[in-house]
Length: 116
Image (tube, rainbow, N blue to C red; front, side):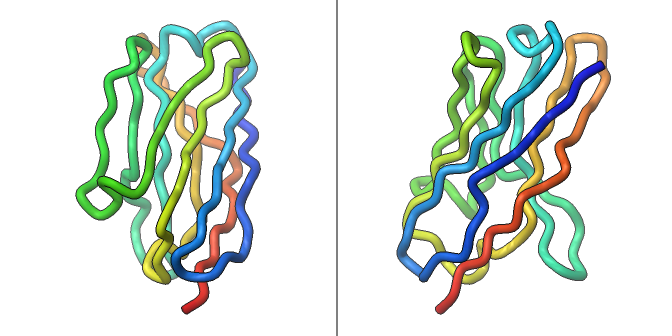
């Protein structure tokens, strides 16, 4: 069974930075695609960034140049470095794990609030 635990969400002023972490349990981390999604109040959950087991990354255009996703396979952890934060980045951020077998797992979410 896979468990994902996020941390690092906080209240920050516009222009500030945060780093989110997601620690995964289980033996599938190394071979899985890891991702960060976010959901603002009243909106759907949207992709922020993903990273494959080989380190290839995808970002939504909304965060390109400001956010960086990375992973440490030795620690079963994925990170999201967020710089130059904007009020529109305010959302609950969710960690996601996609196994090679097509199973998806989610963390409980961490709140990021950016004040103007």
